[in-house]
Each structure stands twice: as C-alpha cells, then as structure tokens.
Amino acid sequence: MGLELILHGGEVIDGSGAPGFRADVGVCGDRIVVVGDLTDAWAPARVDCAGLTICPGFIDLHSHSDLTLLANPRAESKVHMGVTSECNGQCGMGVFPVRRDDAPQLRACCSFIEADVDYTWSSARDYLERLRQAGPAVNVAQMVGQSALRAWAMGFADGPASPAQIAAMCDAATEAFGQGVAGISLGLAYALGSFASREEIVALCATAARHGRHVSVHLRHEGAKLLEALDEIIGVAREVEREGTLRLQIDHLKCAGESNWGRMAQALERIELARAGGCDIAFDVYPYIAGSRHLSGSLPAWMHAGGNEAMVARLRSPQDRARLRQEYEAWLSGQGGDSPFELPFANILVTDVATEANAWTIGQRLDAIAAQRRQDPLEATMDLLAEENGHVSVCLFSMSEEDMQLALAHPLGCVATDGLAFAPYGPLSRSRPHPRSYGTYPRVLGRYVRELGLLSLPEAIRKCTDLPASRLALRHRGLVREGFAADLVVFDPSTIADQATFESPHQYPVGIKLVVVNGQITVQDDRHTGASAGRLLASEP
Image (cartoon, rainbow, N blue to C red):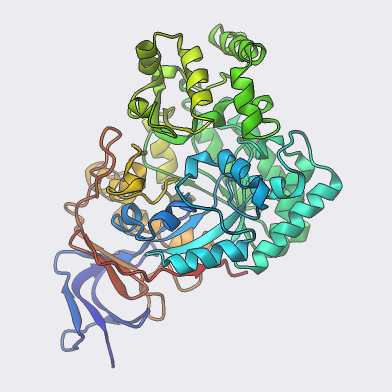
C-alpha cells in the first residue's frame, strides 16, 4: 500500500457525532485510504498524534472571502483555525454576473467583502477561473448572490421586479449553476434584496429547487420581526415544493436588539415545526454576541434606491437627513418603527473604512467617534458614511449569550464564521475585523465544549464538518472515512482556544497541530507551508 501521509496514534472523531476511537489515518494522494492500525506501515510523512484528536477539516458554510481569497489565496485566518472548505457569496452579496459598467456600483453594494482586487470577470465561469488560477489554500463552494442577479436584470432600481426581469434573474442563476455554482444566496435585509417581492423570491427558490441547489437566506428581519421573517421564507419553501425539495439554510440565526432577547426558543420552534412538516431547513450560527457587516446595511430601504451613489447623495441631502432623524427619534421615543442604524451608537464598533483620513475611527465606537468629532452621534455617523462613500464596516453588539448558546447547541445548527479570510500581514491586515474570522472553530471547541460543556466534542465536530457538508450536498467530504477527501485537522482538545479579540483580532488560535487540505499539509505547528491544494466545489444534486 503506497501511503504518503500517516497520522499515527490519535483519537479519531469522525464527524458523524459518534464517540471517538483510537486509530491511525493513512492518506494517499487526496484521499483517506486507511482508518485503522498503521503501526507497521511506512509513509514519507508520519505525524505523531498521541494525545491529540484527528477530525475532518472544518467546513465554513457561511463565508464572505469572494475577494480576499483573490487578494491573498493563502486563506491565512481560515486555514489556521482548521477551515479546509468554505462557501462564499453569502447574504445576497455577489460579485457575478456583472457588466463592466456596473462593477463599481455592485462592489459598493457589497463593501463589507471589499478587497483591492480588479473585477476582470463577467460570468460565474470567469470568476471561478480567476479563483482557480489564484490557487486558494482552501476548497471553495461559491453561491450566486441575489444583489448581483437583480443588478444584472434591472440595474440598481428599488421596487419590485417585473415578470420579465424575474425571468432574467432565474435564467442568470441557471446559467451560473451550469458553470459550477452551488446555489443562490438571498439578502433580504440588504439592498438590493430588500426590494424583492414575494414573486421574485419564490421564482429564485423554485429555480434552485429544480436544479437541486442550495438556498441560503439572510432574513428580512433579525430583531422584532424575526418570527415573521422566518414565516415568510418557510412559506416560500412550502410554495416551491412542487418544483423539488428546497434545501434551505437560515443565515447566522440571531435575535438582534436587547428588546428582542429571549425569542430564540420561539425561532427554533418555528424551524423544528417546518422540518417536521417536510421542509429541508437548517441554520448556522457563530459563537459570538456581536455580528458584523457594512454600516450602510442598517439604513432603511428607501435610502438605497438607485445604488450606492444615490445613497451617498441622500446622506448629504438636508431633506433626507431630516427624514432619517425623524425615523431615529421616533424609534428613540418608542413611537414605533426601526432605528436607521439598528442599535444604540455605543453598541456599534467601526472595523474598517475606505480612506486614510478616517482610519483613526477603526476600533472605536460610533458614540466615541462623534464625541471626538464634536458632533451629535447621528450627524457624525451620516457624515462618516458620506465621507467614506458608504464603505464603513462595523461590529454590532446586538445579541445575548443565552440566545446564542441555545442556537449553538441545537442539533440543526451548523457552526459558521460569517467572516472573511484575512491575514495578519499585508493589505488584509489593515482593518480590525470581527474575531470570528480567526477564532470561530477553536472558540467552539475550547470555550463551549471544554470549558462550559455546552456540547460534547463529537457533536461539536459534527456541526463543523458532516452537517455543513450535508447541507451543501458535498459527497465524500466532512467525515474521516476511507475514500473521503483527505481534509483533516489534528488538535489538542486540552488546549485548543481562540486568541483573536475585538481589540486585537489578527491572532491565530492555539492548540491546532496540523491542517491537511486534499492530502497536502497546509498548516503545521502554527506555520503555513505555502500549499495551495484547494479546489472549487460545486453542490451535487
């Protein structure tokens, strides 16, 4: 037997949720070929795993590395925490299909995922070829985003799409499926997806169902109207059942805003009932009480009509600023409505801006920024967004620990980062991103398994491996089994922990000894080997 790598003497937790067992793992090429006793076997690479755990590589079901992987394909922050595959193009934020003239507006709509990369593509095929040539260190499944589909079919207008425009979106999605895309992501809380009618959502979901593809959805509301938002998308799933089973994934399930804390049990009950009724539904969650996105994503839908340039013009318009203030003050006084910025300004931390002039704001909260600018917080926030042409990324401290733990422990919940591949050096180190991009999986295994006992180790690993693989219909990944892809992580369960913080996020975790991607050692003893063994993955119907 020609083995190339042996992991010897570890406890295998295979990703299925079953208890661990003592075994060696033998790899040849890109496959696991033996799970058993290899005491007397030889391979050119043999790693002593005594006292360590061997498990499948983590599959990040919800990621936003569409552009950062092109800027730095080593995927440093992801692969150092054990991620071997990720699914990008989420929350409706897409980089294709795109016409050359629309590229500046589209990338502005998706400023949260921005990196210094030229758009040289038009179609899914073009983008995926560019990614393949970059040689990513991790496997990538790619979604097509609703915003890109809408821009392709109807530009950046607000309001519902016509039947012809909806048909054009569905045709573009079908073409993307044929070019290697795993599914459609809906961003119903963000422009341009926030303008979508039920007819548009049903049509896109029906298209995915007919082709056996994955649909992920950032719900229209994650706060006071969370349950109504769940009912909306579950109703859509039931409506398209005649087209085929819709594999529906709820993005980063949360109850945002202190007044909404405690509703997680109701949300989970909604999901359980839908599942019991035949809906193929699950969700993902990250182990933090803060989210992260572009600050402009909080603005009401009317601010986004016409695209980013129109939004920035409204931020400078006295009439539109007055309207925003009226909505904000109505929210403050409890007279109804939503805050234009979702949370109190003290709960919003700036993580990135576009210009050097405002780089000093990175790492500060909006109320502190306003104080330094000697402005009212609402005025300062509107001015900052206008000065940065809409490119302000933030962390939003909106969740309760109790709600998050309830979702994390639920058997239908996958672990995902909702983050990007960053690096602690070069252009991708400039911002101060959410620590989830460096620490999600070690945080689950360290804090929530070892320290708090919220999950057993086998169950936690299932949520990071086989469960997301099944959601993406990825065959032969997500388990330590003979014949499966050799995507593997070796870690010390007694020491694994995240190190990244909101104040200092560019820090790798501790306790991970080895990360293998498609049979190639990619991280060993905290060192990236330079391997670029990642592949493009398409969901298999």
